[in-house]
Structure formats: structure tokens, C-alpha cells
Length: 287
Image 1 (cartoon, rainbow, N blue to C red):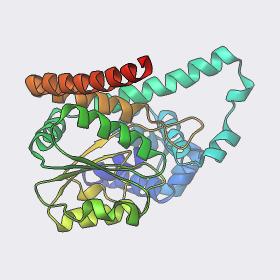
Image 2 (image 1 turned 180 degrees about the horizontal axis):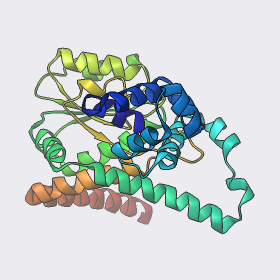
Image 3 (image 1 turned 180 degrees about the vertical axis):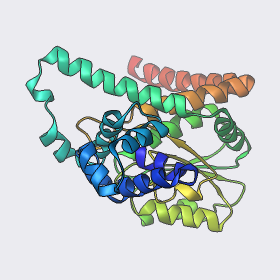
């Protein structure tokens, strides 16, 4: 997000750029619709200074900066507000498909390009060492987290636990959680209150937290050992899950590459268990 980038660069700015940056952050909701003349007046600087500030933070000029802020603000809209604001319904089906596809491809590209080698290695190492792996997700996210739990369960010879629902639904699962375990948490806006409780509980027991979310605005962002940020921009829904699903696939494949023999053994064992089960079912039908 542009606001995050400006905040991170604040200490590098000249006095004039710091003045503009403070004005932009203070009036951020208006920045996607304001003219360069208005911002110049609000900040008490020249229009040329606004252009130089825009370039200093990586944009070609004020118009590109404004468009990026508009994109940031759209992500914060509620789904019903996104539907009300869209003009997709005025386009033909081919145009709708192309725009929707471009958006999801962009989500995928930004998610995968943001994954740093060092962070990925932390995840793979921690997953390999953990005694138990706890997965947490609430609302729509729990369906994506359950896919992650399934993938890791297939590839790892260790217990996995899915934490979802209300606190009473998962309290019995976490009562024996300790520092030999890890917690993998996935959360996107609107962030549920349960995540704050789970993270606090895990931290009290020295359990390392690995987080998948959309931005530093996530309330538990600062408490995770490692965070992978997924682009979640949906044109009409609250969140897009293309990025998180791709991330699950990537991590699963890295687990296989890291321990090929274990991956082969676990997949073979799973296949044999399923074959026996289906053979038994077939024999019963043949009677």
C-alpha cells in the first residue's frame, strides 16, 4: 500500500517531502480524488514539489500516485460497496472475463513475487521440526486453511490440528500446545477477534506463529515470527484467495523437494490405505 511505503520512507525525506508525506497520510481517504492544486494548497508547497515527491516514492508523477491510492482505497470497500461502484456490468461478457482474469493474475503475480527466500526457508524448517502443526482460520478463510491442513497432513508424519469456529470449538485442541509446536494462521479483512486470542495463547507458551495475511494492518502482524503477505484484491468480493491457494501449493511442493523420500513414502502409504478401503467397498458390492 502507498501509505505503508510513505510511512517506511518518512525518515529519508527532505523537510519538504516530509511535509507532503504527513499531509497525504493525514488525509489519505481524500487523496484518491484530490487535484494536484488542492494538495499543493493543503500541504503549503508548490505543484512541482508534489511531482518530485511522487517520483521520490517510485511513481512517474502525481497522476500515477493518485491512481495507486485509488486502488488502495477500493480494497477497503465492503463487498456491497464494490458492487455499487463497479462498471463491469456495463461491459460485454468477453470484457468482463478479461478484466476479472487480469485482476486474479495480478493477485497471483504479486503474491508469488513477494515471497522472500529467507522467509520461505523459515517456514519449511519450522514445519519440518514441529511436533504438532496447528492451523487457524475463521470465516471464509477457514476453508482455505483446511486445504492447507490437508496438504501438509498428506506430506508430513505428524499430527495437525484445525482451529476454527468459536473458542469453545477449539479450546480442547490447544490446551496441550507448547514450544515444540507451531501455529500457522491465515487471516484477511475483516480480521476476526479469535485470531488475537489464539496468538496471545500461543505466544504465552512460546509457540512460534507463522502468518499469512494481506498487510501490516493485520492486528497480529507484529507478533508473528514470519509473515507472507498475499495480494487479496477482489473486484467484487471481500477477498480473493487465488494468492493464498497458490502459496499452499508452493509450500507443499517445497516440502516434497526438501524431503523426497518422506514425501514418496507418505504418498505411497496414503495410496495404499485408500486402495484397501475401495477394495473392501467393491467386495461388499459384489456379494
